Image (tube, rainbow, N blue to C red; front, side):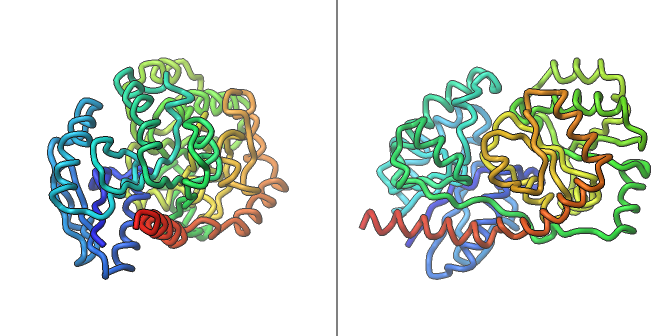
Length: 377
């Protein structure tokens, strides 16, 4: 079987959630199935480390897809001709973007449809593209996969898709996310927070990740904080956000908020595993890979009580309304001061560990590929 794959999100040192899904799953699937040929279609020069096995053939298809207009050119004009020339049996798209003009069998992984529910979070061109094309992609696909039961139900209901057409494959966490010893944590705190305990957020600074309420909740928590907690923010803005800057400048305890930018995987592990808790309070989330990584490190979570987050965090989190700055601040206070609660959450992380792994994800995605190919024979 010849499987063409959209790998435009495999970007050196710039892997985000869907990029990690692409990386971890394709690394496993290509190596586990040497009997099949995989054609990786990049939209710019690629890193050789992303060619995971001898049965992977890379192709660069211009132009780089940096704007919705370029999405249309790439997926609707350039890609169909390439797929036809390659005589591909299947087009697999880990980010859900498909080609409406191609007659090749297609499997799309739609991680969530946040843009359907929160269009205002995106710039005009992007929200118009997503909300015009993704309903069509969902109906065009021979089969769909997604990363949570919540997203499966949401996609089926919103786009009026048969639920039997959608497979839940989940995400996982890299094996390097393991607990650290007390001495190791002390070293990390000395290096990154001046020895202070801290909460951490990991992710892109998009509007739906709710950084604004998170930093305001932290500012409220600091008014009663006696241990000099810090809030470490790891990630970068997806789009310019002047309002976030304005809110930050008005905070009373803004000097206790540390913007660490993008970090290496090794530093991510150290910083996360040494935190008092992960603070993850998005308005909308299809899965939430940092939640799984935190639980693998045996670090409890302050989590949103909406969308897919409770499904992923289970009993290893305390839940708050992401719309409530007050609840976020009080949640941090409970995590910082209630030792009985904290020990219960620690015990829960040990039970929740290994519920979601990349090995399981790759097995489920391969099963979805087999289903779609059997149905078209």
